[in-house]
Image 1: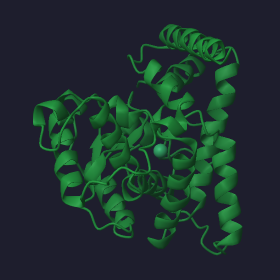
Image 2: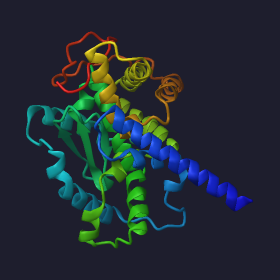
Image 3: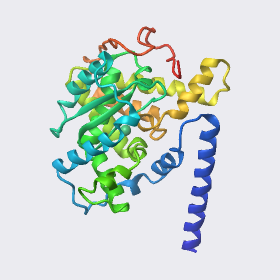
Image 4: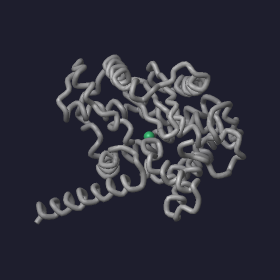
Length: 305
Ligand SMILES: [Zn+2]
């Protein structure tokens, strides 16, 4: 009886994964990550490394992260020396300087408006796409996203994800060919709900310690809530359609679980409990995004342009 129930659950999960994959394919041309996202969403706690596992050393983690970054830098198109990349890197370094683990944090800005995402690798590499920066009005929002990603590294979420995958794929320490086979999607797909909320809390704490407003995180979640509402409404204008397509590419930082409202509520509770009420002043984004000059609170413009 128990086996039968397990079979039914697996069958339903498989069918749902196919439906999700098909629907995403129909909504937007966003690549093959739908199944990975579905698995990340549904097997949250199964994706954690078993507690008895030995953690790799910082030196091992840095070497592995450097190798993964080297293997994928070409396909991601990191623009290391543009003024925008410098600016994003500066904000990231300010935030990362407050992390617990003193790792060589490196911020990579990817000039690709269809890349509405940010993600981190073990050892210190953080990637952020111009598509996500385009959603922002303030430097505080940028600091909150970069803080969130740094904390996925700082709290070993990326290292655990790597160790789990390496074990499943039988990749040993120093197995460079094995590391090169790892798809980036294992780091782009997002983490468990608990880990995402932890990265929100601790990332916002880093941003506040670096002098930024915790409202940066709150306003980003509000923008995402507005986009979630767009998702259910029929597209009335080309801009709505562009929003819908961009929504299809949101993953990683803007996972559907936990919901934006829940993430926002957590930060609002922290603003009260941590006494951050006097630190709410935000600073406009200095450059970049197509939305940099739009009035705060208006709907973000996203999509290809
Ligand atoms: Zn995250």
